[in-house]
Image (cartoon, rainbow, N blue to C red; front, top):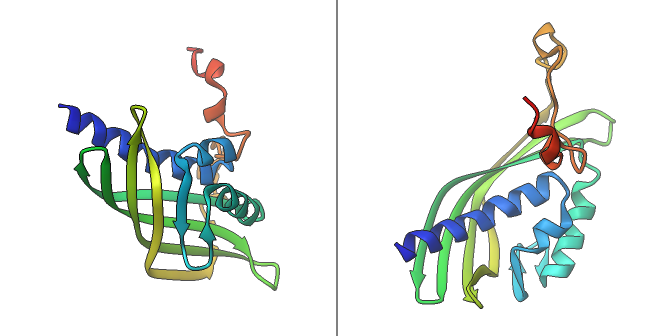
Length: 169
C-alpha cells in the first residue's frame, strides 16, 4: 500500500512539472526539485533555480505550450527511486518570417527521486529526445464556427487558477 502511495506522489511530480511549464508557474515548477538536484538536458545543465529561470524565460515567448505525460515506470528502493517518463511537448512559436510553427518534441525523462522528511522530489532529471517535428501551424479549428464560445487555456490567467469560479453551478 505504501509503495502505491509513493508511486502516485512521484508520478504527480511530473504532472506538476508539466503544469508549471505550460502555465509559466515558476513557483510550482521549482517546487518539484530538491535544492541540491541536478538538471541535465544538454542544452542546459545545472541546478533547479537556474533551470527554472531558463525554462520560464524560454517559454514566455511561445504562443502556447502543452506537455503530455505518457508511460511512467518507477522503481522504488527504500527512500530512493528511479523513473522513466515518456512525454510529448508541443510548442507554438513564431519563426523568423513571423509565421507560427508547431514544434512537437517527444522523448523520455530519466529521473532519480529521493524521499526526505516524508516528501518525494526530483534529485536528478534528464531529458532524452526520441523524435521531433516542426511544421507551419494550421489552426483551422480556431478559424471555424466550431470554436465560437470555446474557452482557451492561458498562462497565469488560466481558469485553473480561479478555484472560486469552479464552485459555481
